[in-house]
Image 1 (cartoon, one colour):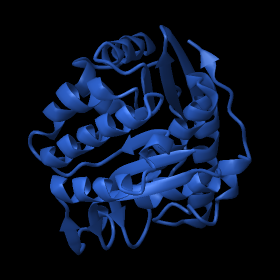
Image 2: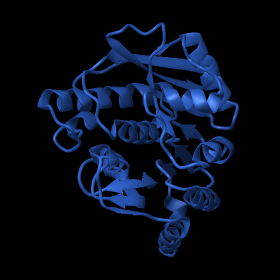
Image 3: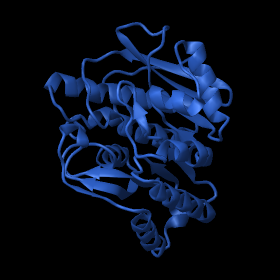
Length: 282
């Protein structure tokens, strides 16, 4: 498949496109990456160099790709960190253009807004743009729990709350919603849940909680979930495959004591995960 991936990029480490591109390529897919920012490293280090691009820069690159006559062969658009609302508008324009060229193409939006413990960390206007523009335009969305709560306008203290929130976000437009990290009253302290909703059904994968906190894992799981969904057209199957791969990736990272996810060293986890987790209906 051919995936147009529009999100941030770093030269050192793995976040944004630097986290999402290689797993999709390792699974045999072509990726056309467009960067919304290009930094030396992720901002968690406290200092970085580089710049944020604007919507026009994105549109210029899309125009150049379109000039190659390949948009009809684009199977999906993946977006992540946007940086500004004008970049968001450029992404939605790109999605419309790809869908015109290939009506079967899908759009997966990773609605990067914030996280538990950090709150909202994107620029003003981005949360509203996600809720009112990007999420309604998407076929799939992949929020974390904080973003799920914000988009749904409710808290997710229990599994029932989470299912209601998934349904509320689906009500905005997307057919599939994946919550990439879920901790409710129903989740054991030594575990972490992932859940996906599609067509009125919800599936859950529960994995052991690891003692590692690194940037870029959410970008990787969104990409993996998207390409597995494109291949199988099953949220449950995509959930199980993506969760298994990312657990293996994070476990290898924890064992190595690395601050950056071992995207390259642990690449076999994308193709043949060491441990396979099966989704269960809830």
